Amino acid sequence: MKYCTHCLQPDTRPNTLFTPEGICPACHYFFQLEHVDWEERYGILLDLVSRYKGRGKQPFDCIIGVSGGKDSTRQALFVRDKLGMNPLLACLTYPPEQVTERGVDNISQLINLGFDCVISAPAPGTWRDLIRHSFSRFTNWAKPTELALFSSVPQLAIQYGIELIFWGENPGLQLGDLKTLGKTGYDGNNLRNMNTLAGGAMDWILEMHGDNGDLIPYRYPSLEEFEKHNISIVYLGWFLGDWSLVNNARYSCLEGLQIREDGVENTGDLYGVTSLDEDWVTLNQMIKYYKFGFGRVTDYLNEEIRLGRIKRDAGIELAQRYDSACGDQYIQSFCEYIGIDTSAFWQQVRSSVNQNLFDIRPDGNIVPKFRVGEGL
Image 1 (tube, one colour):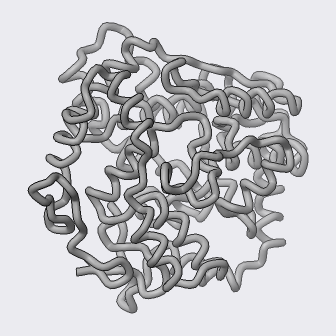
Image 2 (image 1 turned 90 degrees about the vertical axis):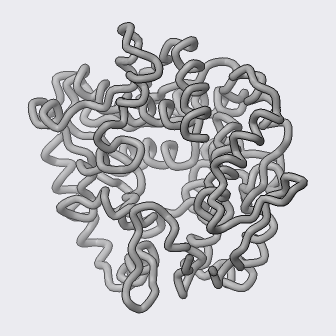
């Protein structure tokens, strides 16, 4: 395990590759931004937009996947108010046991800002079954729900005859998932290559659940379907010089976004601005830490270090303290939802701990072998 020499990105992040100088892909991209002509990029965006205005079969020029959170709120407002487009918003909602009141209020507030929004809700029984299967097999409850979240947007684009999909950040450049890189910095058509969507993503679902006609929401359209319907995904974040987790939250809070108040010690969320519509992603961030040696706090800190708002040494202290943070109340509610007790939950988590990175003590405590910022 090695760390980027600039931020706190470890080389254990899937699909990442450091430069010979020890710089992670996200920092390498960030350093290049110093030389970007943002007016030129904005001109590229305006030219691209001009090709899609009025082109859809419906009155919508483009489609944006939204949760009502910081990124989707900023995108929707920028596309409508700065680019002059008429976007259709697509929201895949969680079942009542999972969605937060905050999340419901935020998507309602976004709609109240004057947008058309299609809200889809996969069958709750299938949703619960797939979460249970996914947690027991992968110690990752979110694999099927992420499939549905990513699939819902191009599915609706095809249904409504909309050819342009706006997505937020480029995970290849801004996070380091190199498999998603496209022909240009804003080309998102290789999003299908990310871990969640890559080939065979449905195989385990078909094996464990079978297909009784209830899996349509989880099927990401094929490349042939994209080509048949002229679907293109564009990463909007590539065009915005101030695109960041915190900046997007600032823009959105001015438009009424409600943020978290449950504290970093319960969520690993330094500023309370992520995963506002549900709480169980916090479990997966904790489990991600035990699998790969980094969690939500590290993802926050990497961006803040690059932007010069936090020093690397201060970031190390915060990562050591909070990267495994997860409130007991969230674990309890998740266990009640899938029908297990918390001892079974922790047994499953411990079975998936990366023992190259962690020791599991006789009392069950999971202790890192590495030092944040230094590695093994």
